[in-house]
Length: 253
Image (cartoon, rainbow, N blue to C red; front, side, top):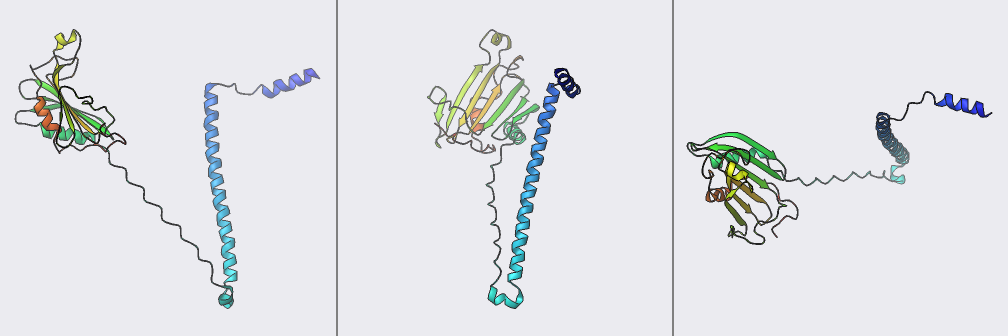
């Protein structure tokens, strides 16, 4: 008896596929497909039942509301129209990096300046853009970052380089700051001028100008950055920037 049972079990399992990661993955995928199929069938069945019920009700109304006894049986019950769905609130349009790049070029453009190596990144609640600009005295990287908020206010607590503007926003400037804190600074000698305009709603405009074509890894090409902190401050205050929407709960602290 035991031999027969063992033989039957062996024959029943000899063609089973061993459990492998591929088999497990296919099984999970098949389960998801079946689940979606069951959901669709259940939805369709529910809709069919609703339609059938509606048909029976309509038939009853038709019989009760025949022209001969319409005044006796009463008027058919009016079917209420479904209320119109509320229009969803439009989400504020995010910032466009290409537009940010175009604005950067327009604000920095001046006679004798050329622009190469355009860069963009981000999108939505932040956008960055950069150019390598040459005025005939050496190539220099200039970049901008627009943010909807979330960063810490650089002037809390207040420090050197901070000033409060009449509209309540703050401006932080850093002049000719070295890019390296080790021996590489002597090798590359790259410094930067940096400005951030931090608005009361938390949005901020960050601008940096270098004295070389890159932040790091390349030699400087001029003694000082192309744009001074005064130049960058004026650019940050420009109304030409298309800022991203304010990030929730990101106002000035």
